[in-house]
Length: 161
Image 1 (cartoon, rainbow, N blue to C red):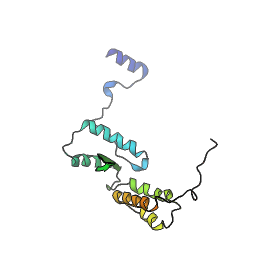
Image 2: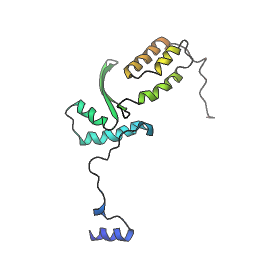
Image 3: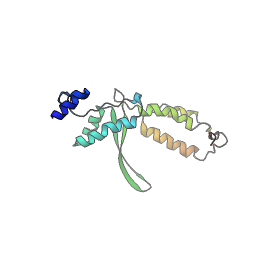
Image 4: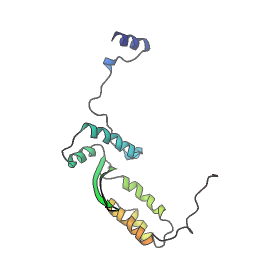
């Protein structure tokens, strides 16, 4: 210990015994406005999963809401194989999902040039429910899936490559 004290004095370091120690996990609530939501969510979930054991999914969900994170359990089948998983989303101060509100305004640009699309576009940019949004996208695929957009879509920029 004397060697530590000597080095601390010589180089002007803060003595180790005077250092403030944090109690608990130093986790910050997710702030959608700060961007990189996926990283923020994983910075909360990883430590919680290692430090806590949950009796139920409700407990897990309740704890995550303290950090502005919503979670939903999803189950289904794709190409005959069953799947199960969790979908995480950022929440605002009221507990409302904010990710869908941000991404939905970009959807209409993906469907530019489709004939008679105005009503569907308006629906896309106002939806708040994820299952309803996914159903709408499926209906777009069914209705306009075979439409050739090559005549109305500009070629990609080559940037001199």
